[in-house]
Structures are given as C-alpha cells and as structure tokens.
Length: 205
Image 1 (tube, rainbow, N blue to C red):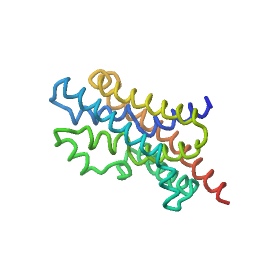
Image 2 (cartoon, rainbow, N blue to C red):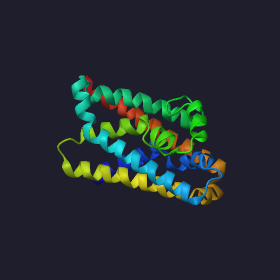
Image 3 (cartoon, rainbow, N blue to C red):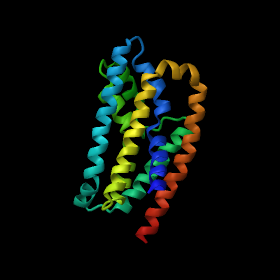
Image 4 (cartoon, helix red, strand yellow):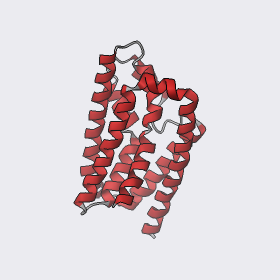
C-alpha cells in the first residue's frame, strides 16, 4: 500500500506541475496585493479538490454506464499523458493542457481561481484521467482509496503553498530552473504513460 501511495504521489505531482504553475500564477496576479493572491490560490485549490473528489467517487461508475472498460480508459489516458509529457520535455504548447488563447483570457480575468487555475491548470485532463484510473483500480479497498485521496490533498497543499510563496520561489528558482524541472518531470511522466498503455493492452488481450 505504501508503494502504491508513493507511486501515485510522484505521478500526480508530475501531472499537476505545481512548480511550473508558479510563473503562470505570478503573471496572472501581477500588480495585485497579497490578499488577492491568497484568495485566488485558496479558492483554486479548493475547487480543484472538489472536482477531483467528484471524479474519484463517480468516475468508475460513469465509465460503466458509458460501457467503457477501465483498461480502454487506461490506454486512452496513457496516450494523453504521453502527449502532455512530450509538451513538457520539448517545451511546446500542444494544447493538451490549455491553449494560448485560454491563457491570454485568464490573464485578463479578475477572478482567475476557477478558470484557468482550478481548471485546466490544477485539475486538468491529465490529473482527472489519472485520478479516475487510480481510484477505479482501487475499488473495494477503502483504506487505499482514503490514502490516495490523502495524497491528492497533499499535492494540492504543496501547490497552494508554492502559489503563496510565488515571489520567493521565482527568485530562488528562476525561469531556467523551472524549465529544467519541467523537462525532467516530462521524462518521468512519459515513462509512466507508456507503462499505462502497456498494462492496458496486456489486460485487454
């Protein structure tokens, strides 16, 4: 169980990318006071937690109603995660997470907590897919499910903390440091995505 939770923590942390979210948060809240940044960060994390909890509890049931097997979703999710990984490694915006138009709109909005912070940056397609897959595979094990959601909350807490410490993180990390971390995370995510696809195909056949 500990190994499963640790693996899920690494995977979910890489997908959410809380470190690379800091420069985006800094750009969207530029010129605003500390109270505004605190409100946006807290609201975004709470909304993302609610969306992820909804997918964790009802995602498997939704797939069953739609007639989609968990392995089919695992293969599709692996492909999508691989595309996100390529985007991270090569620093290209493929549109798998959000489009440049959405980013521009987010910078102009007064309330950026729901869009684009909570969705699609924190609880984006990749995060929703991995939550649905992991919780779907843990059905019947209550304590594992509780532990998994505890991991989700831990990653969201780290995300909130980094957003609150945005000025300090930007000074310490810098743009170059953020890019290096993003590319390393992309390599890890690519390997995990391929493993999802292999497991899904193996189970199907």
